[in-house]
Length: 351
Image (tube, rainbow, N blue to C red; front, side, top):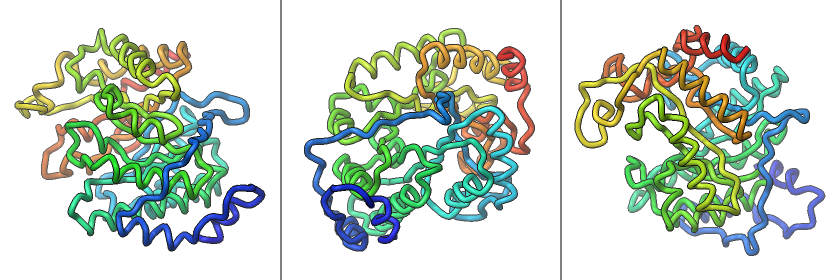
């Protein structure tokens, strides 16, 4: 890894980088690299061969019987997926830095498919939890390694996903998040960001995070915010404009939005899908949302990651929660990689 970092810094006149093992030890101790001063932003440029590729998609590679940390996809599985994806998108978002993710990057490099990646680093609350800090450190170190190893494939490095919003199940201390942001910026040349819900980025405390990243990745789900289908994209537009106004010096990327095709209406109560999701749910509704969202993306040229390419059965508790759990059904392709009627309708309309 040290060799990769040295290669990444070759030709620069910056200060020599400390040994990577020193960084690892520092992070394991809970110590933070110094914040960059002054902060020099790195431009996130979602272009490929001169073409804007900001109409993007989130990609989870796990099929039935697969899950992170358990059984991962084969290279053949991944190539099949990426061949499908490349027909519709040239930029994908992934959420973790691990062996499965590197397998995707290897396949992309070998196949020369016209797809670039926003790579994720998965983080969770580590307060009074040395084991979780260790796991977070492993993720960050792997993310740094992959960013330096695959600069031809990666366009950005995303540190943490929904770790700051008040409702997060893995909410972590801001100082812990920023420790990893600083490490990523110090040891890579890649644009670095943080992804979180709009209900964090619209709060004053988000300024501290925004000031240390190159651009903002913001999640905006009309469906999860009790917005009906007919108002979904206008609501998204208003939220996007409000976050842009709150952070005028940062590019705002829409990191997640979508419309699920199935949910469990019986799960009611505070924060539950049966309470928050109102109006029409299904493939017809998803198709209408896709058409309206696509028009908004192209009209406004806002980099947007649709959530998501393929249904993921492992999510929302896997088999234990039954087939109607909403987290399993955000894809525009079914788990078996056949397109949903909603996506077929969208493609016909797009032509």
